Length: 340
Figure 1: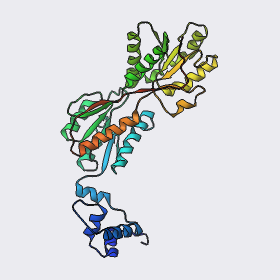
Figure 2: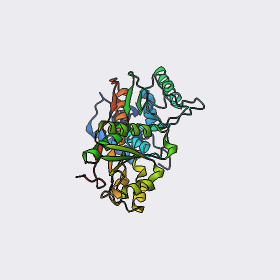
Figure 3: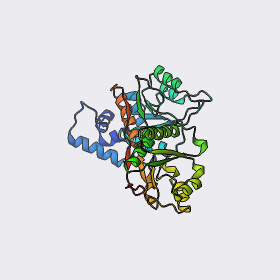
Figure 4: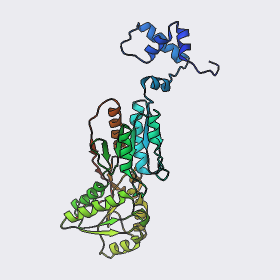
């Protein structure tokens, strides 16, 4: 076409039919019937001319943008964020929709997702709350705006609990609780919890994981629990070598595994012969340690998929309000021993 974009008019002209006939056939419009020969001819011509329908124009006719807003309050490079976004993208692709990232500025009181919705540039939002306890973050304010503007929405990892909206919660609390109970079931009586660096202690998920460990220890009468700061690896290793340390450790998340493995190796502490280790999160690196790391899998991609499916249900007129918490599960590898 000499660099010129093919239009529906070009397809109709070459096929010798009206523009409306081409539109009906290519959009598979319900209630419109045409001879199979005509249908095949138009599809073939459209392919030959490399005709691409304008989904923006189609969206205007349907009063839809075919765009889903994803409201983010944290770094896209974060492992949790990446997995949730991956799940969302699987579903938006299935529905032939696009993702529009919306990053609000709390300081400037700019809630760009509301403006985009009013301008019909997005059809609804997946609102993903921050993991850190940001002093400027006011979820109640956002929930009020979403309701006032009647924005179709699903809240992921929210700290509110509005029964008129759909929520999906990420169960960080259960990840360490489950990991601790798993070690107890393996026969360990002295279990330590490896805390992250001090600058991360304000992060919501860090606190939820700490509570999960504490509550598991409280419920296990015969198990002794201790907290180990990430800066005290040397002290921990020496206690284990001296026979006075824990026999198992729960890592706050897999991101600390390399530092922990290296610290134990430095002092000759063997995993799992001398120390069983489990991480309260999972990623692809777990299989590549000297002793592949047993982990708790938080189904982040599935959370993204479920949230996106819920949003499309809302957009399609289904209004069953749901508040979901998907189950975590253990992935057993080779970093934990059973104590006799």
